[in-house]
Image (tube, rainbow, N blue to C red; front, side, top):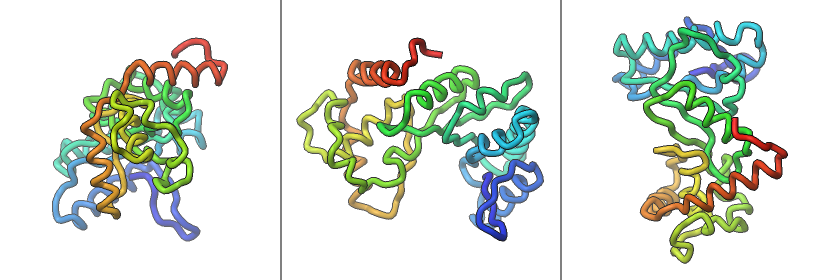
Length: 221
């Protein structure tokens, strides 16, 4: 929830009444309460009204929390492309989501990775999920060029670079699940096969250290 149709395309809103109406419509469309409802990209509205960021976020989160309590969904979460504005919108009494979804993968910059970790420490969600492990395009040329196998313990595994990149995304940052497109069954089989392999933790740590040094960041927030 967060993006709505408008006269000139999609518009973003955290208005509680609009969010509540959208959840109720979703229940009607599905014929059942959804398992999880996400507040999508709240940072977009927070950047537009920084002086009211806490109030906007608190009201939106309360709306989703109330929807879950009222049986309109099993649980709720926040999906954020850039966690930094959410960190800035701090305050006591903010309902924190049971699920936090963040960008994951080799295309995510160190500032976003660090912000995701900092937000997780602050909110302490029950689960952290990942999204957009290929930056929106699993067929982009970069996925044939990147040496993603270097992040696996079994570096000789019979996987495409894209599948190896998907597996490594579970540790950039650490997530328990990753949302991917479902239109290509062969692609899904390939990604599922990658889950059996283990990621090399020390390699991931060195990679994040290199990203931090390249960005000129000397300390982890």
